[in-house]
Length: 272
Length: 288
Image (cartoon, rainbow over all chains, first blue to last red):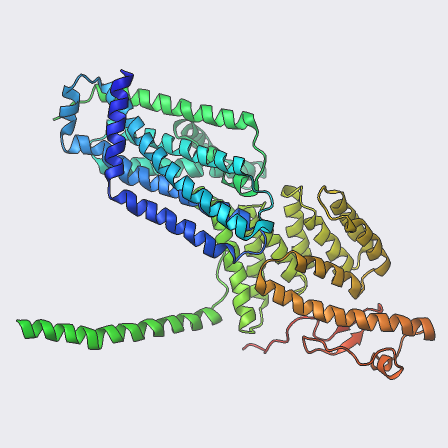
C-alpha cells in the first residue's frame, strides 16, 4: 500500500514540477529576495528584522501561490480530464488515491520550499555580511524553525485543498473554498482575541453571539496564526519546545482528520 | 493593405508613443505636486491592519515605517514645514508600526530622534519608548532614551537617572552608562548632556540621511558646549553671569561666538543653559 501511495505521490509531484507557472512563482520569490538586498539599506537599525520579514514573506507567499494555483490544478485535472478513471481502474483504493495525491502536493511544496530556502539563506547571509552590526537578535535556528512551520502551514493548506477537491466537482469552487478557509484561518485569532479584550474592557457589548459563532469556527478552521513564527524569527526570540510540539501536533492532527474525512466522502462519490 | 499597415505603424511610432511618453512623465510630475501638498494621508488603526495583514504583520510594519520615514524625509528635503497635522500622522504611524511589531527597534529610535527635538512631543516619545520597553526587555537603549528625555527636555533629573540606572543594569549595556549617569547628575540639563547622548546615537546609526541630520545638531551642540564652558569660567572669575553672550568675546573668554549651523542667535536662558533662537531646528519657509 505504501508503495502505491508513494508511486502516486511521486507522479503528482513530478507533474507539478513540470508546470510552467512554477517558474513564475520562483521568479517572483527571487525578485522579493533581491528587493530585500536593495531595501534593507533604507532602514536605520533593525536591518536583520526587515531582512527576515521579507525573506519569510517571500517563502510563505510563494508557497501559497504554489498551493492555490498549481496544487488545485493537480487535484482537479484528473477529474476534469477524466484521467481519474484510468487511475482508479488500477489496483488503487480511493483512500490510497487521496493520500497519494496529498503527499504529491506536499512533495511539490517541500521541494520548492527547499530550493527557495537555499536562495533565501544566501540572501540573509549576504545582507548579514553587508551589515553585521545591525543583525542584533538574529539566530539561524529560529529562522529555520519558522521556515519549518511555514512548510507545516502549507501542508495543512494542501489537506484543505484535497478535502475540497474530494467533495466538489469544480476546481473553481475548490479554489474559492480553500482561499476562504485560509483567509478565515489566518485572521481568526486576531479577531477572536480582539473581541475578547474589547468585551473585557466593556467596549463591545453585542458581540456575545459573534464570539460564540467564532469559537465554533475555531474548531472547524485551522488557526494559521499559530504556525506563524515570523516575529520570533525576525527578532531571534526564544521558542519554547512545548509550544513547537503542541503546534506541530495540532497541525498534524488536523491534517489526519481532514484526510480521513476526504477519504470517507471520496469513497461514496460517483464519477460520470 | 501594406501601405495601410505602414501608416498605422508610423502613426503609432510618431504620434502615439511620443504622446504616451510625454503624458507619462507629465502625470508623474503632477503626482509629485499633488503629493507635496496633499494631506499626510491615513494610517489604519492597528486593530484593523493587524487583521488585514493576513499574517504578514511584520512586513506591513516595515512598509508603514518606511512610509512614515519617507513622509518626514520628503518634507524635510523640500524644506516644507511639518504642520501639527503632519506630526499627528507621523506620531500615529509610529504607534501603529509598533502595534504591528512591538519588537521593531527603528520606530522607537526615529520617534526619539524627531518627536522630541523637532516637535517637542516629549510625552508621545516617552509613551512610545515605554511601550518598547515592555517588549524589548533586553534592550538598554530604550530606557536610556527615556532617561535622556527626562533629563534634558523635561528637566526632571531624578526620574531621568532612575531610567538611566535601569538601562545600566541590563546585560550588554555599555560600561560607561553608570559613569554617564553620575556625570549627568552633575551637569543636569546642560548642553554637555545632550552632546554625550547625541554622540552615542550617532555612533550607532546606519542611515546616512539621519547621520547628516544628527551631525548638524551635534555641531550646534558642540558650539553650545563651547559657550557654556566659557560661561562657567566667566562665572568662576566674576561671580555673576554676563549681560549678554557677546560679553564673553569682549572679555576674552572666547575668541568668537561659534556659528549656529541652523542660523540662529545664541541666547542665555534663565536656567543658565545656552540655547539658540533656531532651537536647533532648520529654519523653514512659511507654508501657505
